[in-house]
Length: 85
Image 1 (cartoon, rainbow, N blue to C red):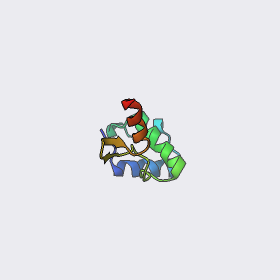
Image 2: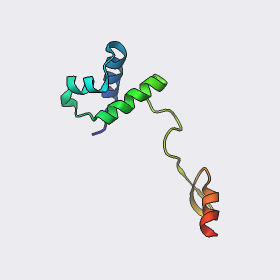
Image 3: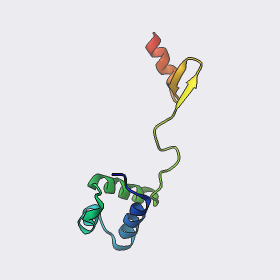
């Protein structure tokens, strides 16, 4: 189950104001159905950036279509050259 924006805001507020950790959040709010790993990754992002939103450009690179077909934006032509040789 994906964590909602409201859940992420709740986690951030409890972490910042009361210093709750991932295990404390799981034990205090068991009905939410959160996983320990998802809370850990969210808390890691809060510690690193101070926000709960994903930073622009931090996801998987999109595919770009060139004349030769689909290839990744970074290094796609080099991979295509290696495959054809």
